[in-house]
Amino acid sequence: MVGNCSHRPNRQPGQAKFFLTGYLSITMLHLQSETDPAWVSAALAGVETILLDHAHCEKKAASTAMGLIFRYQDRYPLMRPLSELAREELEHFELMLDVLEARDIPFERMHPSPYAGRLMKAVRSEEPLRLLDTLIACAFIEARSCERMKLLSQALPDPELAALYKSLLASEARHNTTYIDLARGFFPEEDVRERIVAIGAREAAVILKGAPELRLHS
Ligand SMILES: [Fe+2]
Ligand SMILES: [Fe+2]
Image (cartoon, rainbow, N blue to C red):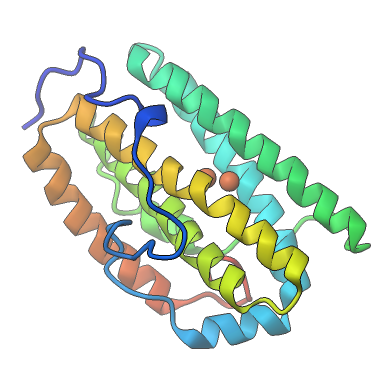
């Protein structure tokens, strides 16, 4: 069951409280699993691949937010938070292009991780449940990005890259909260919680399954 869908979100995303970076935990992000340390080792060994995939992920995150703005034009409360989020993701994309250029890593196409596609299979097809599930799934993608960026910030031996990832944590955690807050603005708390648990379980299973190639979400 869904509630009144016309009211504004309970809390404006920009006003969300953050508590980073040292004790940002998976619980705060609603994640049901921690990244396997083997992923961190693989990421350190393939850092150029991670940086290129990260650039693509930022571009995709902006595109996803823009897609929601177009799909849900009758949901005014989505417009500004998702516009701000898309803009911030494009800034991150440009930042990653700078990083790639500085390291002579060519920007080129790459196969995306199957992670997001597999996670999105949890989204129910009928509206407005589709909206609820999409917002929660997007929140989890942001959450996993945030968790992995934290791991990279702690493990990367290159101080510049470690600082880069540390600098991105707050934004990615805020994006997680933006999507959850939007869901809470449109749907009853009980429904949101139920989907956080259900989609969170799927997210944990998808990340455990891994991917054929090293990626930010492999
Ligand atoms: Fe980002
Ligand atoms: Fe993000």
